[in-house]
Image (cartoon, rainbow, N blue to C red; front, top):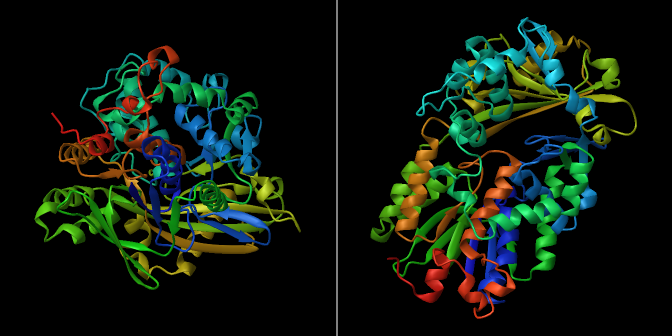
Length: 540
């Protein structure tokens, strides 16, 4: 069996790992996995800057973990690290850390520490005299229409427009660099959407079929029993990163995969140009490399971890004039309907420790859209992971973010026309205003991350389900994973890759008394496309 995985970010790497573990169950050692990545380094938007022994991230800064009550997705990510023998790389933040305790908002031209527990939520704050707990209590008696999806609309009904403008706006600007008036809660925060509409948490909705895969129930048990997960729960971890940065973690994951599976090939600097389906039903992938074009044919299955817009372009180029590719051309059009945002990121480093430089210690602060500010927010990196500070002197590292849904408004319509000097001057201006830091930085560097975060607009779940349904009905050997579809966090990307590969290749493990007269092959779910192909079973 030949499997090609397109895209070497965390989703593509996780897909490669899970495929290398699961394929032997289906076809023994008779398989080949090829991972294609357009950049020299793997990791996608997990890009790390190392300077003077200090470490800063251009993309995600940390991976979430919810202390004593982690989600399955959170447990699964740490379980992956443990399975790969990468425990020593993990750098945690516990509940006792100031970064976990203090999160701030800059509003009304002041910094405000947010309530962090029910005790503090029960008290008046500098933002509003009515305690946040009162708003939460009242929200329990306010109903939201079933067809309502947008975060701001729902928050306004439940908590009031003032609270929505403050908290929902800041929250979405920090997580997705997006306008909460345009983001679907159903797509971006499905668990929250289900709670609001009083759907049982253990009942899967029509847009949650990704959770329905072989051994899903066993995964819940195995991740809860994983030694690294148990350690994280006992120590009350709230987030974690890798000791030398998240990009280094991605390189280590790739090394471990290649060392443990000789059937895996990773091809860097190979930009996927075309993906098409041949008349025999198998797939073909063409990629541009340093040495010319790479042509891969007779592929049994393609897993795309590319951004939706990049996959759409590749499908369109590969199937525009091919009769058998008419369905993929339709998929390409739908995928390109998913919008993306550009984000300018600025790393700034000042002399002095955080306690000397910052007015408040904590994770960082966010800025709601109602505030006049160039910035979406600032992460206080030296509070979050002081272990990644430079060793020769005390400094304070910050990461500033700007743009997102407001890129055109703040920086103009052409990202290529914006200079680094302009971005950095704007960042320093807001740092001075919001943090009171007026001295010149020891170091400053910026970049623009183009189309780095997808925008989950209203009806996003319907769009993705439409794409998946068409490919399933037409038995197209192409699966989708990555941040474009079912969650933008690192945890979502890793978990969704596991779900996709499990649906394709996993076997349903049963108790001994259930399998006495059955072979392992018969345990493979008959609904699996790959299984039907191997056995020649036609869809009813």
